[in-house]
Amino acid sequence: MGSGTFSTRNGGAAAEHSPDCHGAYLEFANEVEWRRRNGDHLASVYRIYLRDREGSIVARRTIATETDDDAIKVASIVCSAVCGPGAGFEVWKGETRLMMSRMPAQPPSFSELLQRTRQTRIDLEIAREDSRRTRAESERLRAQLEALCVATGYRAEAAGGHR
Image (cartoon, rainbow, N blue to C red; front, top):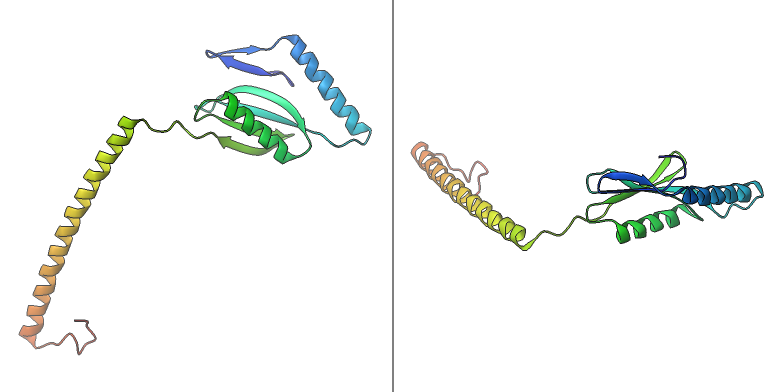
């Protein structure tokens, strides 16, 4: 991708926009540069990269806004409007990445939720059974300890035990 171009990828094939788009960018960049030379620092230049859910860059756009926050807001709005679930964006100012974000993934389907619920129930039942076994083992050990204490005449209360 050349500097200042806006490219999109449809069906996996990258296609740059017409030279008119590039010419419009050059006009825009020249205007921003002219403003900077003449003391008008109202706009800063940012690059927005849109990414698909696999993380590949699918679009790039250069914009100018007054603040970093405005550039991030623009990128978020554009990504929400044109990108699918799980996609994301990056905002760059010069060599500095200001923001990298991903849109929420598609909510799970009913069948996925049902499967997760079933698995959670199975996991809980296994945990309950493990807990029952652990408690039974603990009771058995306590009974053995009490029998040992009685047999030896040892009093757990006198030694700071609780019971």
